Length: 99
Image (tube, rainbow, N blue to C red; front, side):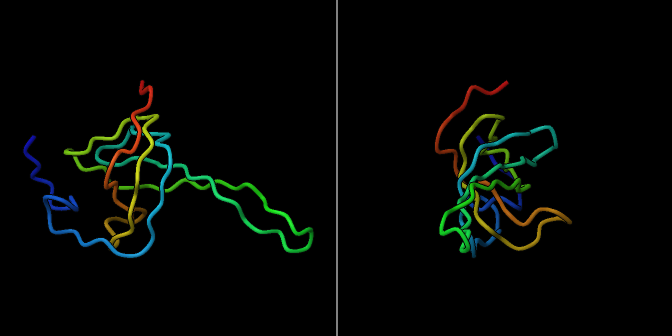
C-alpha cells in the first residue's frame, strides 16, 4: 500500500523521540487518530503497594498501519502533531476483534 502521509514515521519525515508505550485502541472514530488506553502501576509509598492506573492517549494513526478498535499497538512520542496529539502509532503488536 502506498503511504503519502507526511506524518508517517516510516514513509514520511516525522522523527520519533522520547517515551514508548504499548496499549489497546479503544476508539478509532476520528480520521487518522486513535485513542490508546494504557494501564500502568503507580507506587503508593505510604502503604508500600502499587495502584493500577490507566490513561487514554490520542495518537496519530497513519493509513499504512490503520489500527482498528481492539488492536494492541505500540505508540512512540514525537513532536506535537496537533493540539492533543504528540504520539504516533508505529506498529500493531496484536490484532484484536475490531468492530
